[in-house]
Length: 450
Image 1 (cartoon, one colour):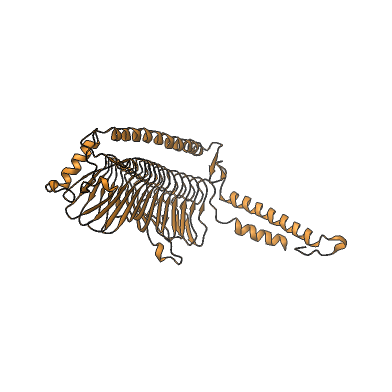
Image 2 (cartoon, one colour):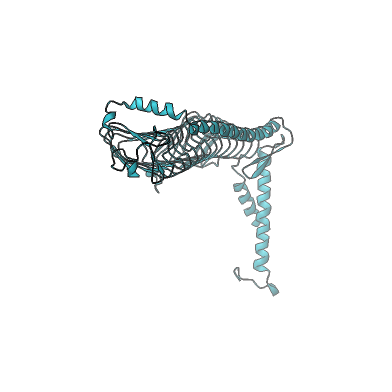
């Protein structure tokens, strides 16, 4: 009886995993079949029509595959896994691109309530949509995360009424970002990006939203410039109404920024220390400005006036670098000043500053260094893959397990070995249980929990 049970358990547990080279190629996973694509090039060209969650942990796993039944989760953990998948990458709860270069070249968009791009250069130049979280049995906030280095470069990332996190180095560079909350924590995390109609923007990292654009909607919004040079050289355009609050707390966090208060918007701007150095604010005729310290406001009786060292710049107020403030909303003399003319003059001057030149130089150095690191990571993988393709003796580590690349391995051997291992473990466990249960002195039965 024990032997029979052991074989039954072994038979069940040995079904499903595609853990060998090229195993499950072009396979159709139906019903509740387990799509565990753990081997090198496992599940290439497969069709996932299963209620089980596909797991693509092998290098180059699930390439050119198709999802015909949307699962709860799909995990692309291996190197270049899920590359070129047809009909997009969709899930009812979470779609994750965790491997190096995972999800590149997918035909269609990445869509789920939670979309995670945690692998380096994982979701480059894609449309990423985090949506549907409120419709789940247990509702969740729509969330798109770009935590890998250059993970979402040049992508269009949308998190409807949700959040976008760009915590990797240059993770969302040159990306379009649309969400209620956008958090840029990585070094140059949202560099040169376009952030549209946010409610809250967090700029934590160094140069995190530098050289970017923040375009407000017709409602209240808050921008927290907390990191060093966080919003440096960026353009902030408010919506046509509501209140826009900008908190300049970080070291030179708003340096060189151009802030456009338009429509009937009220702009509330706080400057600490040198946060607003070289920043420029344009106030339209029907807009309103509230600035702290108040002595930076040209309309205030205690306005600091021009700097003695550089009369083209305002002086400091209570140790704080004041921004330059212009526009018909604050100065009658600017009644004929167009916003386009003002913006051009601002950036022409800022691009001549040492702060701007230093930013561009450091960005180039950092970009080259980051590219070298990623290239080294990719090269290490490709060297292993070359050995695989040549059928040489090598081992490829895939998410914590070793996959043999010997050409003689195949599915039957895999299932037999797995079944044998499970059989032995089950048999040994059963014998230990019998010995414990009936191994008392004088043949007495011992209580199980004695």
